[in-house]
Image 1 (cartoon, rainbow, N blue to C red):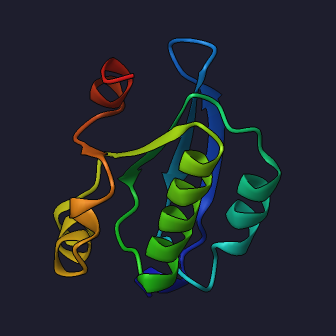
Image 2 (cartoon, helix red, strand yellow):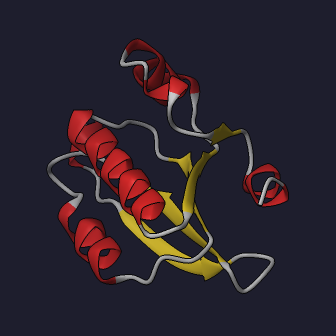
Length: 116
């Protein structure tokens, strides 16, 4: 089942020292988000955090909540968060919930970095 697949993530530096990219792979759901949530809570807040979700086929409301919580965390600590690569299914979730009116969305990581 799609929602039973694991979520993996990798932190990698962006094109400059003040950009951090999280590359997420797999569904972002309540069942598998807690490791990532723990990492995010202990991570420094650079000028720009990018969530590359181009390999996330599905996200539930808990996964969306994790992203929104980190968005608020970044803003509170002087940074920004941009989501890159959302597929049409995830974009529909953002649209229906009106998250797309708040959360910066870019088609690619390169475009997210260019806006830094």
